[in-house]
Structure formats: C-alpha cells, structure tokens
Amino acid sequence: MKIYLVIVLSMLLSMVLSSQVALASTAITLINGDTLQGNIIKQENGTVTFRHSVLGELLLQDDQIAKPASLNADNIDITESQDKKANVAPQRIAVETTREASPGWLLPNWQRQLDIGVSGADGNSQSQNIHTALNAKTESSDRRWSIQAAYDSSEEGGNKSRDEFFTQANRDWLIPDSPYFYFSSGRFDWDDFQDWDYRLNLAGGVGKDFIQRQDWTLRGKTGLGLNREFGGEDDSISPEGLIELASAWQLSDDHKIELITTFYPQLDELKEFRNITSLAWVNKLNGAMRLKVELTNEHDTDVPDEVKKNDFKYATSLSWDL
Image (cartoon, rainbow, N blue to C red):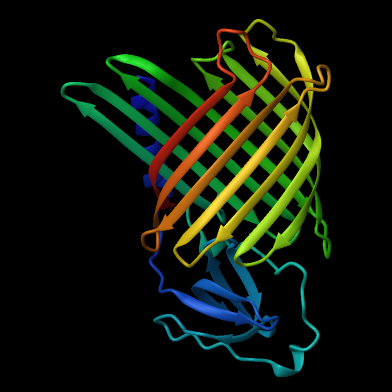
C-alpha cells in the first residue's frame, strides 16, 4: 500500500506543478568570456531572463553580456554596451530567480524535478523495484536552497527486500564577493530494514565554493550537528561532526556527473562514523526529460553485529522538469 500511495502522490504532484513551456536552445557569451548554454525566456527593462541547466533561472543585465551566439524563435535582440564591459568581472555570476519563469503554486521560482524508475519481472521469477524522488533548488545573490525526497522499494518472490524513505533540506547564506557561506541542514530517514525505525539529523556550519564555473563546481562544508535514532537499541541524542564535498561536472550540453560525499564522525565515540556517498550520471534527452543513473552507499560503523555496515543501492530513472 505504501508503494502505491507514493506513486499516486508523485503523479498528482507532477500534474499540479507541471506547466512547462518548451523553449529553443540558446547560447550567450558573458563579458568575462564564459558561455552559457540554455534558453532565453524574455528580455525587458535592460535585463535578460535566462534558464541554465545547472544554475537555474538567471537574471542578467544587458551590460554583462558580450554577444548572443543564437537567439530564440522570438528573435530577441540583446543590445551591447561597450563602455560598461571593461570593469565587470564578478566572482559569482549574479543569480536571481524570477517569478514569471517558474509557474506553479508549490515552490514557485524553483527548479523542480520528478524522478521515477520502475522495473520488474513476472514469470519464472517475480521481482519489483520502485524508485521515486523529488528534487527542488533555487539560488539568488544572497541565499541558496535545496530540498530532496526519495522513496525506494524492492520485492523479490513476494518478499520485501527494501522499503525506505528520506527527505532532506539545506539552506546556504551566501556572503557577497566571497566564496564562503554559512549553512544549515536537516535530514529525516525511515527504513524498515535497519535496527531503528526513524532517524533525524540536524547540522550547521560554514562552507566554501572552491570552484564556481559554468562546467564545473566544487563545494566543501564543515560543521557540527546532532543525530537521533528512534525505535532502535539506543535512542539517545548523539553529537556529530559534518564534513562534505560536492561537485558537478557539465561534460557537455547533454551529459553531467554529480558527486556528493558526507562524513558524520561521532563526537562522543571518536572511532565511530557514518558516510553517505552518491554518484549520478545525468543524460539530457530533450528540453524537459533526462535519464539518470545513480549509485548510493551508506557506511555506518556503529551498527549491531547482525546488520551490515554498508548499504549499497542503485537506481535508473527518468527525470522530468516540473
């Protein structure tokens, strides 16, 4: 019943959120030499609203743009301002979300994606695997938000082998003209095949954007947090550290690789730690659909003897922009 409820909710949410308009692919060149590949949405009042596959919705000033490599079907014209180009070399591209660019009542102005993967067999053997996830993010000049939720279920021969759900949220407070930022994060896990029923983790600290390019981003975080497991042998609050490294490589217009690894060392038992690592390859199929292959492993040193320290899973899914 849980499986079908998640599928129905995902389908309803996608229908409510999806009102995407297909746009022609466009490339523009900034005055610092960087090229952005995406879609011009509109131009008005000396600004250009541009959608990038990695950075999301950008609000660019006309004097930040050197030249457009191509224009959309509406033949939008961008006027160059030569006398303003020489002294503009921003460390971070000015990123602003616009209300008109992202319709929908839930999380407006955010990039939103729905992932669904289903596989199974019914013959000499019976199996069923379901993966569904929702991802949303937004960024402006002073803040960055990301929210994720995922449900995974596997069944073989009529017996459940996986039944788990997690949701997490992260908020970054950006510092103008600086690669450093502050962050807070929270994660909730539910897993029927662990020695606990629910787990809650909260953390906060500082981070740095080591590399912030159009084709490659590298970001690090360090901080302190709290972890608590409910329904297990030990339901006390455990203090944890947090060390995270996240990177995204835009290999081409259609291919991207994303890697994120997070260590949670226990502060009350220094030999114990958790690590969650995920690696994803994303292949863009068209303007609103992607094929995603994701590998995830969680390693936990502080588990009972009958529980495996490594929990490895993989998922292949189709991803839709909402």
